[in-house]
Length: 345
Image (cartoon, rainbow, N blue to C red):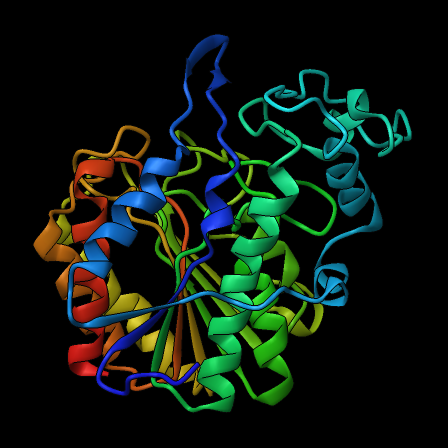
């Protein structure tokens, strides 16, 4: 399908809306699930109404690409979930330590062996939605690399940055950023910037020993914010990857001004020093001041400023949707960020 050069390409597939978790367990309480279809619908509606964007349906993602970033057990478990009755949702509730047992991914009851929280359910539609979400990220990366598009946006839903090779969680099933990163790494050095409120523990794990992918995350302090067990400044990589993983945790209540100063003074110089060939942005908008699961105070205008800061890198860029749960303003926040980035790119 030919692209319109003046517009920002946006990848999305309607089947990403088939997965509809209704609730989650949070610290013992049953609450409405934040990761609803309204998130993607809000973004899609806003971008479709703008003359600056072009919506494209991605191609199927090859199974081999999923296998390169995710274990046999994860893929098998998701296929097992396909057999759940329509409308039924399974929530992992027992999480044995891997040293104590060996799970069976063909038994849905063992899902907790491959999951790290109680808020990421499985259903017969999980595989469909998650594979199309991953396909969006992969197609955006291919477009930027092959067609030399300066900027492409993957409206990936469900999100992905919490997924490691072996474990899912954080509303995530496939690590979309890792898939794009491992593809682009074949053609040059990759900088991967995670601006979601929550640390991308899964993405960090995929590249922790890799000196060709610089992973930088700016997020809520894990001493008090999910995922709690990762995202500390001391996590800097291992082996050849030592020094190529940087975490910038910020306290609850961080203002837009404070956030952007961290970007300008610390994150941007590190990205410039790395001299990447490609940039991937795991773009979460749960830093917004009204977000129900984030605790920063960014305003819509701050996302435009943030986009302009990142655009200064002048790198071929793949933007992949992660979090953002205040749906009335989510579409506008995404649009503001993307247009801000294009302004300086």
